[in-house]
Image (cartoon, rainbow, N blue to C red; front, side, top):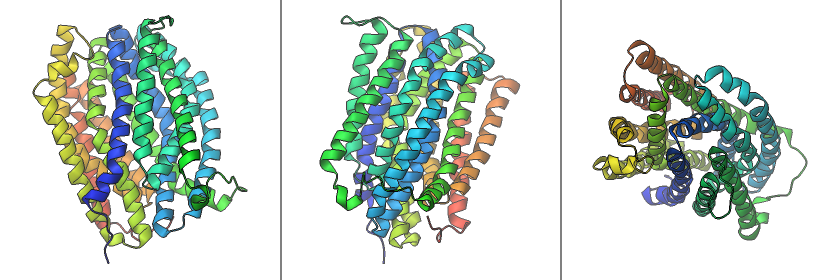
Length: 443
């Protein structure tokens, strides 16, 4: 027998995540665009501070991905009562983690950034941003769990709705708080941070209200908050902990990349932040289809069809690749228009254009590499996925150091490192799925 997962069912799960991710990245684009018109220092500081923030939040994101895999496996097995219990236990953990992470950001971010950021202006603006942005972690952790729940049960439309709502709230508060419009104080980079925190709060309230009104509680045994099941925690931690480390390391390495670029100069850092914003937007379908593959792989194994895993992954890769190809094709013929969203300085536009062409090619490699990698995670072998990621990241950072410190390439050459990352990730993941013994893994 074969599973019924086809292109249509993959698209049905992925497209709401794409809408949600697009809206999420509109938030990043808006922050970058507004701050780009504020100053190059604000633009560069936002890059450093945002990536530092997400490197920390990735601990929570990794736990959410682990919960998503466990929830999807229970759905595949038909054991829906354990879905709610998994959700509730994950909530206990994430609330405590959120408090710890806020404390870490408030107390440790200043000395860490002081030690590693070269420019005093970039450092000062980064701390201004982080001192406010850190409080959004309290709401972001809850939102991560709701996202894991809805992707795990393959009811993803709410993710699109919630993130579009979040984007609207963020854009409004970005505009009025950064520039001081409509009677609001002019706060500059602090305004961008506060806008993001308000948006996280609003979307958390949105998730709670929607879930209370639309989700069948008895079906999933949701919000019953039963006595702690330490055996369930053991399974959750086994799946989630490697993903917490892996995701945090991945963002930390990108943070290191931007620190290396910052030492090249504020202009190179400003260029890289513009490129990062566009790159992340191009990657929206990649991460969305990867999330779908993660859930579907776990579900088909739970249903008893491990032999169908590779078919599901390759179908997902095709959809992801052609989606990115369309976006790259749209952007390729008029990159100046795209860059002008972030800055009206002609020299900055001219210097950013060749870097943009570099990432267009890299973006076409990632649908293969990222989907295969999320397929590995979906099998439940997250420890092995973590080891693969660490090996790839070591090669990636080594390549970045070579390009910047040894070969001393211009910024366009430095960004070719993305080809190494996507290629190594895809090859190592494919080899694992083809030759490793993962089909009997229980979670």
